[in-house]
Image (tube, rainbow, N blue to C red; front, side, top):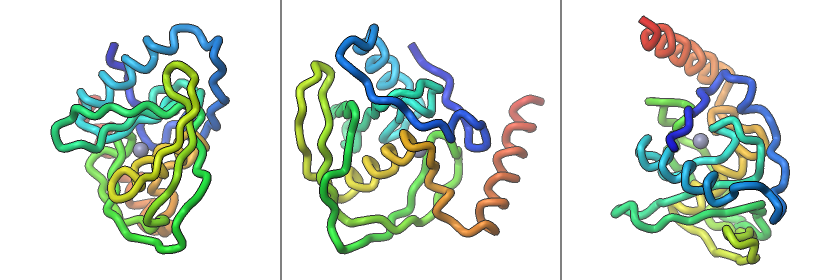
Amino acid sequence: MILPIRAFGDPVLRKVGKEIDKDYPSLQDLIDSMFETMYSAKGVGLAATQVDIHRRIVVVDTSEERDQPLVFINPEIVAQSVEQKEWEEGCLSVPEIYETVTRPDRVRVRAQDAKGEFFEMACDELLAVCIQHEIDHLNGKVFVQYLSNLKLNRIKNKIKKQQREAQQ
Ligand code: ZN
């Protein structure tokens, strides 16, 4: 099922997601719907927050072929490189906006898979950017909040304009 993606400015994007325990109902359905939503929107990652579900779950696929789905449940960054890097980021909740953000170059993530098993993954390149960006969503933060207020206001106006145009 394709879920509606909330746009920046919607207060639900500021909510902090709760941990998922193994009794969470229909977890696999939620995972499937999140992948379907992410692939149909041509995104590389999606956090449950963006579809108004305030649980700590993220789906990612940074492969060219769009055939390497990764699911991270209750993800945590357990280590990060001192080196930082700049990357031009986008977000399904901030359509058509791409801005440079500086983050740690590499991170190690600990999470659970769909069966509740713990795993750790060393992430670099786009995957490192993506997982940090998605964990921010679970904490109620959108990437444009790293930018200056001037830029942020310009983006808010652009999104309002997009929304007005979409309603016409
Ligand atoms: Zn995002």
